[in-house]
Image 1: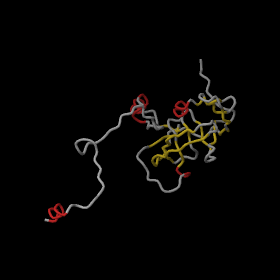
Image 2 (image 1 turned 30 degrees about the horizontal axis):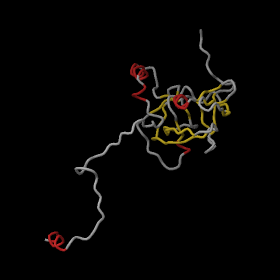
Image 3 (image 1 turned 120 degrees about the vertical axis):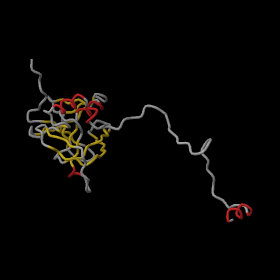
Image 4 (image 1 turned 60 degrees about the vertical axis):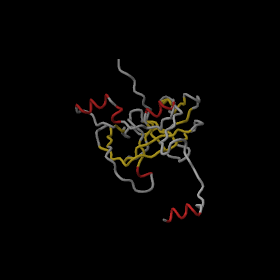
Length: 193
């Protein structure tokens, strides 16, 4: 039995960030969140990290950027994006899973499983390609697909779930702090000698 693929009448789903008025492509087939280099100010140095489209074309990358999106669901969605030579910002499936967001292809909207709210979407032409970490086809690529921890960067900042604080001891006992002051005359004479 063939599985049904979630597609809209005219392609893929877009959502709009209320802060920047930027359209984001919601792509459940992409491997990570990607932001276009042309939408950022300033020059970016190219990195060695390489991405691929679904058809195997290479995409150059230029580091990372953290963005917070307001999709009209009464909460913000901070995310870390890879900066790359693409046309549109892309939201990947792991971000949707992390925040409990669901794609509703039938009514062209994004549902929030936490707040039970939805935000309307727009449709994109099906010619917009997905973003992949591995080009696929070769034996090393098949091996790397089984271990995504090796190739996939952390997309969201993880919340620390402990209260452990690390200190580097430089003095015995608790840290010391003194206000600067004048030396007594006898100590000043020793210091000058």
